[in-house]
Length: 336
Figure 1 (cartoon, rainbow, N blue to C red):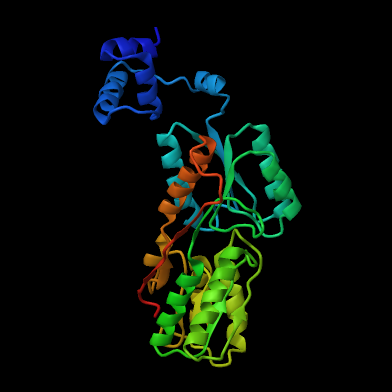
Figure 2 (cartoon, rainbow, N blue to C red):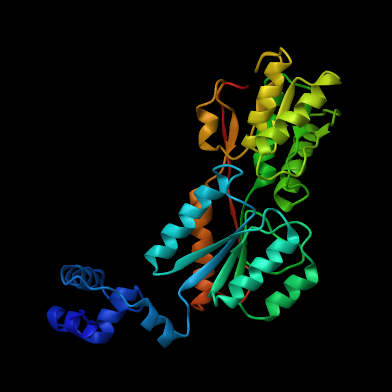
């Protein structure tokens, strides 16, 4: 016979309400009592009935998650691990959709998640989604927050990295290494608030140091093969290079692609062309000439996003918009 909350309450010598609070990590209860109840529940092999909980609370105990894609690198994978770990701890599941960087697909996934009755959605939005769509979506009272990037003009909670500061650190580092002609290698998701912030930081660092040279190397829109995008764009750029000695790449994936193009052109990294990436993906440490990059607290980004959306779902948050900005760090390696 299945173990019930009543059985646990009898064994622990407490009320069913207290057991419920301990199992759901809610309400006022001492840490000692909570630990005692959890140990008894584990010993009795208690299995929480999420279906029953969902019916009683009118919640699905599932949140939706929309990313541009997971194949673009480890960036979103690490964020996902932070989201999943926090949600699992709180008894929530995660339903994932990938927009492929396409506005229409993002809208379709939102509708699908609504049909699946998720309790809230975490979104890394795509540029080009109709503002009216988000305004209408907001009226439907389903909690949602933005992560990594956001839609200007839509008042919703968001958690982002200080991209402007990160880019400023990267370009200032190159300037301190003696470089005066520094190009920015853009990415497939441009334009979006993430890349726009990094562009602002690039321009600000040049301005503050009295450098007038500006160069934006644009890549194609392939979010699933960003290394190839970086490679192709840099290969074309090198053919007509007008004295650039350093590249600030918008992320590590395009930076790694650029390094291949630089070497194929017979140039050395960093002696002939220095390069700095952004995100500090795992692979950046293990490639030949480990990549100097801007480190982003990806796991924490996901963890805090999960906390934000669950607080909205549980009605624990203030009514006003909440904006959390995490700090990046410069990691100096071989490519500078």
